[in-house]
Image (cartoon, rainbow, N blue to C red; front, top):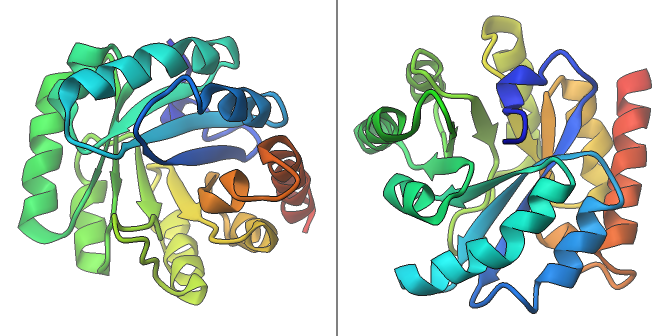
Length: 222
């Protein structure tokens, strides 16, 4: 199994990729291969186009060997039970308030200590602190909601900077654009997440990840 984000927090900053909502895996496999071959990616978060479990399992089977080849953890969004049944490396739970805390508790009970449990969609400092007291492997700030909405970049940077001063749990900052990677890196995020900025790049996902990797290096030097 790939290293958990919490086990690499002392290492150089790494990338975290969020896929589009996938209806199948084989057609996406070349893009994932190109992306993972172009940079140091710690995790890939799978998003699915439907709630059909059989389809989700097929996608995991198609993409898990690629992730393993490149030492990247393959996570599923929102469904800890599916993560177990599909053989994924863990789950990313997003939400807010009591709902997030309850879902994280269920995921931690089902998956820890062998698999990764990450938290996202955290909107307030109070929710952030509540999550930080749980047995999560990371907290992500700025991750897109299912409808594509993301908070302002300034908000993500502020939250990442605040978090790294208080908590030891690794944090991930989501970069809506490639040009935002260095800024989030400078704010102190342990990992920088990217989504459509990679998959929709006209040059291809490999070129986009290579640019993001170079931006991480620039951010770390400042």
